[in-house]
Length: 394
Image 1: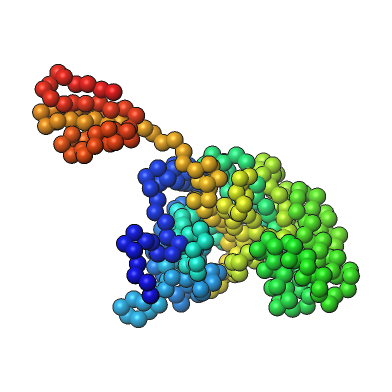
Image 2 (image 1 turned 90 degrees about the vertical axis):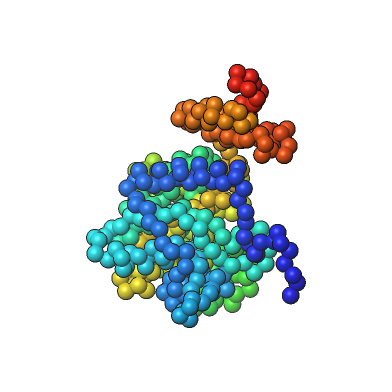
């Protein structure tokens, strides 16, 4: 095993320097403000959870879990998502509260990476969970809220693709007959490998009509007209029920006035195996991957002995910042450099500026190694040096 260099970080871990931290904080605050305006209450859960409960209930693969042992020998995990921990809380600490629950969070989650490929093993999510409402109104609410949250953060050019896990599942099982064969095609869709999907379908021992139906699925991406087209290719009752739910959802999103940002995409599948109905993903114009996602997961709370319906979304803060164009302009910081003779004067000057809402650094000149290098960080520099009455600025 090679010796670690002192400046190396564990695989997938990232440092956040001040400028990026400030940008993320600004985006986070705007998003949480919008979420709270919709009546969602923030919740915080432990970074560590028991593997047997939250770890097992999470849809994240076992290989991506960070595991460790506590002093009693119990296996713990760093939380790999926030949906499972919130489900645990809703089914236990909040059991006496009536449904629906509207909960929000801002938290880091942890997923181990096999190799360095630019993918973080720790990242921040802002999201909501609407627990205990089985109606399509709940799906419409969380999708409309996600659209408004992205807009509040300053994102303009984005779209939200909506699908239904029930349609894909019913179509695949109807034609392919078993989960094993269906999972092969799901993997192609999840990886958005449409060329591989087409090639695989062509090699399947199926009738030309069945192959045509499977290939047609790839065309079901676009506006509301996709719903009518999807109705035509199947008589399967479960698939048709999924289409009707999508149609109803579209109508409700129209009431919220957000359909300009909405696309129908019946190719959406998720690696999260607890999703049971509506699925959605958000994309920005300049990103090649989703920056947010969510859906309905009506079976997860059964694992915590309190079965109920639920839906929600999560936004990746790092990807949102990337979509916004990287770091944003932050409030400038002023600098006051003082010598010991004028310390009191400099402190009073800084106090006055801070009361006026300014950010101010107060620095003893004796503590600066290179004045030119140090002052280059600041737009406004004032000097309180030497005998009183000889203040200068630049």
